[in-house]
Image (cartoon, rainbow, N blue to C red; front, side, top):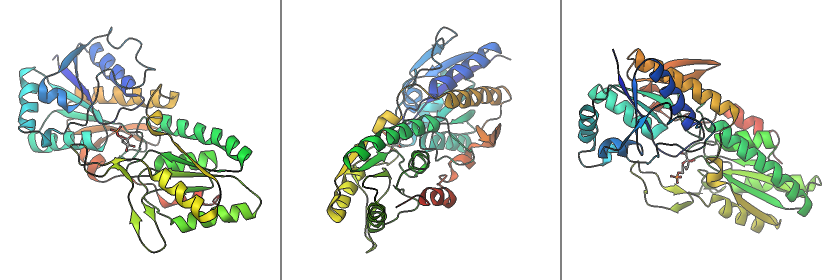
Length: 349
Ligand code: F6P
């Protein structure tokens, strides 16, 4: 029986989204299904914004960053009558299935819709932060990691030339995946992440030990979600806008690199500069690894739709693409395991 398959991309954009859209669309079209793109994440289902996805629409999008469908951080559970409107639009548009491509927020909504309304949805795990459970990796992470590592490599040479401390602020709202992995790959001298908040005093101590060994330059990687932590026990979150700024209640982070650099310079006397990588980590073309992972996820999601495995999500386990329950992916965040941080820490100071 033919199906009308809808697709949406929600939350922060991420390299590889278009590769998923292409894969879901291609495999569904091959089955004789129709594919409809929902514009701007959940907002498109609340407000009824759709676009047809045919083979022409997906031509040439594999290497393109961003999402051809647009994205927002709309949460239908926070919009007046939002969930009812989503269900009505879905029915009036005669849609049979939804593929939701997103992170903890987008897939959290998908999971609730499935649990509470038996909504016919499957998920694909996306986020540069790599903090979704039930999958080894999300797509987008490898690209962000590659950008951050290249930045660290570049900063190394200028740090060394000027005898400076270079603080690199990377993304990672709740977890330090990008910071730890780029720190290991780039040979950072200190890495600060939310999961293992070493103190400002410890970080400065590491830098001083390094300088005593004759190394007059250092690279410090800090995750935007790290709270400035002091030996006294005081912790300070640094945010651009302290009030919740989106419908999922997230503050807009940013600025911890500056605050940390100020502390380092004042406490050690070493000249310290800051680079905030920001959205550069999210933009642009996906790495080959992300293109492949996104494509395999998209094909799996299309197969889950075909088999009507509602409430399931495509996930990576080892080198296998498997099905896991959406609820497992969003139950709790996947934090950086201590052994990864320990690997980075071996090279501190
Ligand atoms: O979704 C991942 C992410 O890039 C986080 O690392 C970051 O905190 C957040 O999104 C930034 O979102 P926005 O671009 O909406 O400010």
